[in-house]
Length: 386
Image 1 (cartoon, rainbow, N blue to C red):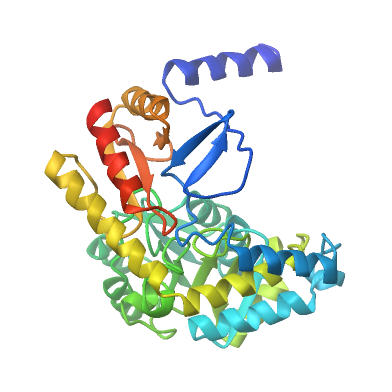
Image 2 (cartoon, helix red, strand yellow):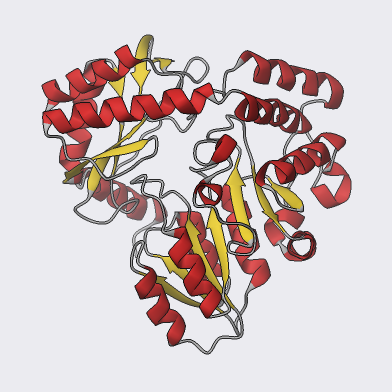
């Protein structure tokens, strides 16, 4: 057997030859439509800061006030000495925002999904997941020790067939509200109806819907007019449309108390800095009061899709800020990304295993911080590189 260095170097070289190697880019300033990177200004279309709040003056001021009041670290897990008044106030505000009795903060969306699934199901149970769910949801299902079944993407009839065949004690159906790599919405009303017929619980990860969809940005569940009875487990992240960091789970009192007692990724993780909670509360107020941000984002999405259609570009059918341009081959997607960057535009190439083989793409995302002129520039550049 080769030594560690030799074995890993061989694998890394293989990834490079397959155009699957990943690189980090070093930014030299805050998030925004334009970024400072490698000594130049870059127009970015790959951020999840959908409402342009990550560098908003009110959010920044609240964060600094939080540091003055609470310091820079929480010091411990929530169940030791890490749960501050700032955390508690944010939980209450988020619960009111999504219309649920309780909310529990988690340090990351990944840890929230792993924690919820493992706390609710075990060896006697079964979990049913959309084939294209986020990695954190899939990992949560695999690590829970329950029987694990993936149904066809956005196919409630495939889910129904899988539920028909199970004799599990508990049945948990898990889906993204908005799928992060194609921007498509899950058919939540159909999934909820199927889950109800089979006495299953529906869990929705609304990382990319919260703040963007539904009345006042309450997310994909609200967008479809569903409530807690249809989707009893709601997960949201704070590092996308809300512009800060962390995640939460919303639901009944019994759900939240169960997670406090049993979710290992909550119990054994340091709480987020209280200052982040203070900043998130300020960001949440902007989401609630500045509806023009969602309105502007909707107009930019329409502008981009109309322009792309006129140019004959192959986009996924998405009503969200995520507007992927399908390429197919991983190497071709990387080359297109590099050509755009040469023109001063940053769009990330998404390749397997993040997406299925043969479906590599440019993941274009729009934000309320962009202008119509910047979207027009993106369309002009796409014409040139293609």
